[in-house]
Image 1 (cartoon, rainbow, N blue to C red):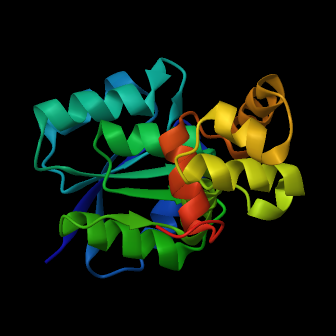
Image 2: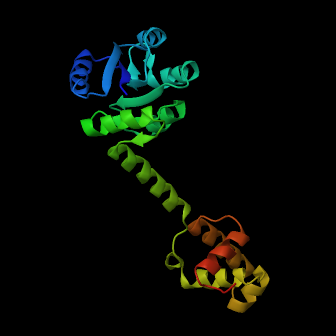
Image 3: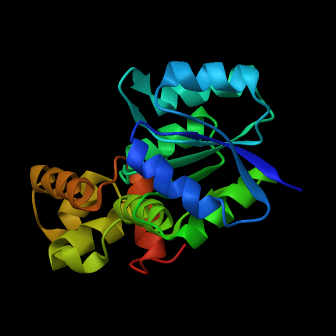
Length: 215
């Protein structure tokens, strides 16, 4: 099966170079080329196309909004983003707009070919550098959501936390540690701030998971 590809990019020299590389593949054929969003919509209305190879930046608009239009008009058409934009926001917005694949222009031809063939089969494909970007963001979010270890707490804060997790009231804790109730409340606020937690229930769960108290 030959895949008919529409190439949408406003740089003529890049289109010519890419057309020459894709022409070597026996299962690929360039169905048409465009340099603007308007030209792209016109081409897709006239020429049967399997895959739209789409940049993000155009002189008369952007590829993300164009992808949204194309997805509404031609729901069966596969969209592969091929762009110089490697930032996470562009990747996420293009995928939300309906692209099945995202490849940066610094990637190798082999990755672009895999993206084209995968998208034509309804599969999702992200080139290696895009995967690294998305994975790095995911790990950062997970790290931000994970409270720090008990070692960030002072010995007194750990004592207060253990007593709070044991169901003790501020007055009882103050008496047990021979400190004022106001000091207990200061420790409670400091615990929440250091651990990024908001409620006593969250502090209790943290204390149990950290082994400061037993369930």
